[in-house]
Amino acid sequence: MIFPKEVEIIEVGPRDGLQNEPGTISTENKKELITSLVNSGIKRIETAAFVHPKWVPQMADSEEIAQFCNELGLEYIALTPNLRALERAILSKVPQIAVFIGASSAFNKKNINKETSESLIECEPMFKLAKENGMFIRAYVSMAFTCPYEGAVSFDEVKFVCDRFVQLGADEIDIGDTNGGANPKLVYERFSRLKDLYPDIPFVGHFHDSNHLALANVVAALQAGVTKFDSSIGGLGGCPYSPGATGNVATERLVNMLSQMDCETGINYEKLLKIAPFAKSLSTKV
Ligand code: HMG
Ligand code: MG
Image (cartoon, rainbow, N blue to C red):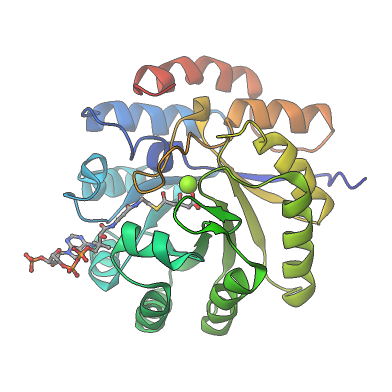
């Protein structure tokens, strides 16, 4: 089996973890969470989303959070679903953006109000503008395994989105198991084929734990050569337009497993254990 010496963990709790909460989470609590995550050794964090506040109210303070992250000097990522979002991110001096497009068009329509093919067209000026502004581009393929609206998602549907991302110059491609419907066999096969097709692209695994298979899926992706994973402190999270999906794989569980396998993450597990209860206290879902 393949166990890399080093694995990069990208924390998505302040964004994916909190976006689906029905109550209000104060900006101060978000800042405290981000600060403690940085203090645990985490280097990259998704902290904001320049989405419409009516669609996702919890991300309405993204401008203020971005300013805070700039002051911290953090390498953070903000979600940008359209050009309007990218303009907001540029004004906020965000270093890294994430575009996110569903391999399943039915999901994409629910999530960002466009068919997948329409989003892929809008992507072109976005990539150009982001590059002109020196931004790192993370490109998500969401619902890359199964979909609550369409059922099984084919490899060709995933490839269709990846082809465009590669053509436009994505810096990394994040393969999202948005509803947690993947399994280790599917994960291994899908990542192996993607890595054969695009050997120079850094891929990221983003596993929601709805079926309690997220850690197993990480191990399967490691076997296919993936060395970057998203996770969420306390296992928080879920997408408001992915019914039934639970949170991401918990950062503390992932770090613990990887350290037992001698894969270095640079993150302090004991500190994570202290942060997780605070993160969970912000959530009504875990
Ligand atoms: P829309 O309603 O189709 O937007 O929303 P529109 O272009 O028709 O414009 C309507 C109005 O919204 C206009 O204002 C625009 O200016 C405004 P008006 O002229 O009527 O006054 N508007 C905006 N305002 C603020 N920020 C913007 C913006 N865009 C338009 N960016 C939109 C389209 C994309 C905005 C909406 O569908 C949206 O915000 N969706 C976000 C959904 C979301 O955040 N989902 C969760 C994240 S994805 C996820 O969790 C999956 C992931 O974790 C990976 C995985 O798990 O696989 C990433
Ligand atoms: Mg997600």
